[in-house]
Length: 186
Ligand SMILES: Cc1cc2nc3c(=O)[nH]c(=O)nc-3n(C[C@H](O)[C@H](O)[C@H](O)COP(=O)(O)O)c2cc1C
Image (cartoon, rainbow, N blue to C red):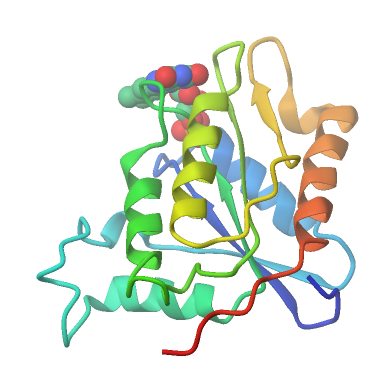
């Protein structure tokens, strides 16, 4: 990804909870964004209907269309998510599904993508992050294997620990360094 004043990352937060740790992590990424990078949290993911091919027709639900346009105008996508029952939360899976269509030309196609986040287990949501990466890759995103940040919240003040925050920001910097892949023209 070329870093210029116009470089923009969209963040998909996998928790709708008001006091979500992961939302706070996403807000820290906004505040600590690398120089020349604008980070925008996609709001309203909870209002997007479950993906349904019947809805993905001539008139796409406005909430889904807004997300598609936000991501289409971005240089990369960062999921910041907890893990629910060994996988990513449905709200994140749904967002990726909407971004994956039209097949081969979805808004996420060709965009650098990474998944990070925190959970209360010792593994920090690693399965959720792996599954989000796999799903985004199948949807056509560019997903580097080396970008990881799966942080436990047990006995760790995630945002109060400068070493932990540095690892988070290093993951964001690594994502910004990834080149997008050109999308096939329809
Ligand atoms: C429905 C549900 C399922 C969960 N499953 C897992 C899990 O599989 N692995 C894990 O590490 N934490 C799991 N947790 C704990 C969450 O990771 C933890 O509550 C986390 O802080 C939620 O993220 P948030 O603070 O951003 O909302 C689960 C929580 C909920 C509500």
